[in-house]
Amino acid sequence: MTTDTGTPRILARMLVPLLSALALLLLPGPGSGGATADAASVCQGRPTRTIAFSTGELRLYRTRQYVCAITVAKRPGPRRPMSVTLQPRGARPVVRTGRFDRQAGPLTVHALNRCVRATGSVAGRGTATGWILC
Image (cartoon, rainbow, N blue to C red; front, side, top):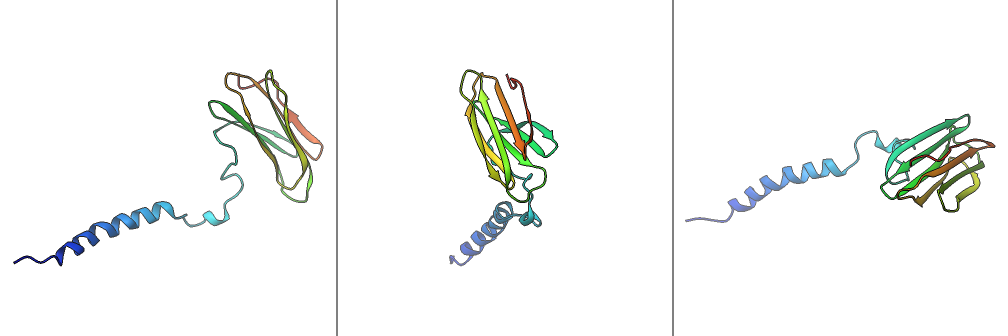
């Protein structure tokens, strides 16, 4: 004589470790609540260049078809004039200017098989690249 009381136990023994492992993978670990701005980027792609200047840095990211740029202040604080510009060769520049407290951008342009030129500034000081990422 067989009963089905063993089937739920076997199923539970298999599902509990599987669900526990899945929960550990999906839930954030300790210390991730206070993550810094450097931990995650708002641009897609891999970091390609970071150009530092006295008041911040210009960060460039690239995918196969797109280039993304952000200007990040060295010290976040009160709103101040910031800008970021990204221009693919043969096209008009895309500009984001204003008063920001932490970063200007992101800007994304289509740059498949094209060089790009980027500029960034924080509080009147900044940097510019020539034609790069060719």
